[in-house]
Length: 112
Length: 113
Image (cartoon, rainbow over all chains, first blue to last red):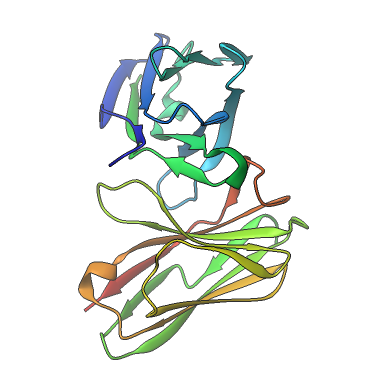
C-alpha cells in the first residue's frame, strides 16, 4: 500500500497564477517531507523540504505547507512560470532509517 | 564532470544477456542509492550503500546485483532479466545515509526484450 500519495497525475495552470500540488501520507512517523522536480531526460532535483515540527517553509516562489493532523502537504508556486513545467514528486523520509518514500508524481504544465 | 553521472543512458538487452549500469558521483558524498522507476509507479528504492557498505536491500531479486567499489562509484549488474524489469533506473547520492537531500543522476532507460 502506498504510504505517499499524489492523487492528481497532472495539473495545468496559466502563467502568473498559483500552482498548488498536493500530497497525502499515511505514516505519522515520517520526520521530513520533500518536493523534487524532474524535467524529461534528467534526474529529479531537490526543490524544498519541511520538517515535521513545522507547518510552513518558504523559498522564493515556492512554499510548502504541512498539515500533520490531516497528513497532508502541499506545494504552492507563485507566480507560476513556463519553466516550472515538470513532474513534481512528493517524498517523505521514513524516520531513523532515513530512506525516502516517493509519490507517483504530478505533471505540472504552465501555459504562457 | 559534476554531480551524478550514469552510463549508459539507454540500454536494450535480451533476457539472457548480462549487462552493467554505472553511476559516478563527483560530490564527495558517502551514501549512494539505486532506485527503479516503472511506468505509473513511484520511485522504488532498491539498494543503499553507506561508506561502501550495503545497508539496504529492498527485497530486490538476485538478478540485480549491486557493487560499490568506492564511495564515488556504484554499479548495478544485470543478468537474466525479465520484460517487467524494463524501467528507468536512477542512481542518487547524499552526504551521508539518512540525509534527505539526495542528488540524482539522469537515469538509464532499460528495455528488456
